[in-house]
Length: 221
Image 1 (cartoon, helix red, strand yellow):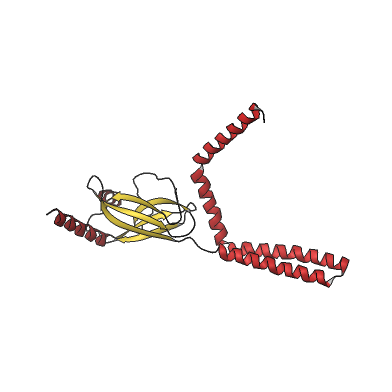
Image 2 (tube, rainbow, N blue to C red):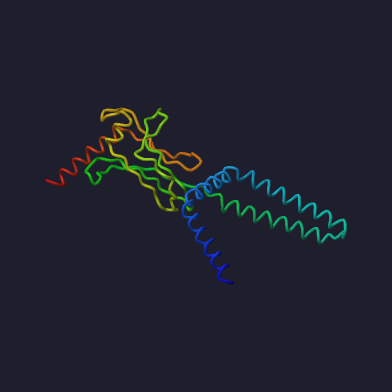
């Protein structure tokens, strides 16, 4: 390899790394969408593949049988179809595990001693997934409220994504106070728009903050 070819190869490698890093999340998101569509239509896709391969094998089988008139060859092809079916079924069962996501929340004080609710999405599956925090809203409202436009983030298997909103922000954006008797909803979403949400009773949440206040005061005394 001469110097020119070496420099060209290095240049393409560097460009590939830069593009891969910059578009990593988008690539992961598209991969997640494709995987989700496959999981949703898995039975139909596998059935089509089985019928297609079976049709091809039967056609080849008939052609060979007419030429050789060999029953042993026919038995071998039937055995081959059985083996292929077993492999396909094994792959079907192996990829049949659905992603599991658990949404939870808790109460906290941030570094500015402001009350805040933190929202957590736990990826309990054995596959990584891309998630975006939508924010919070009242039940019946269409729009979610959040502080900034968060970018979708890749959450590894067994890992979690955590976001926080102050109590004052939630009250202001949702136009509620401590006496609000309804519930709010927090959601994380997959790239295709599938939402994973948790309904939070507002009165119970305020009660938890009151107990947290009492606990902190007791510890300081």
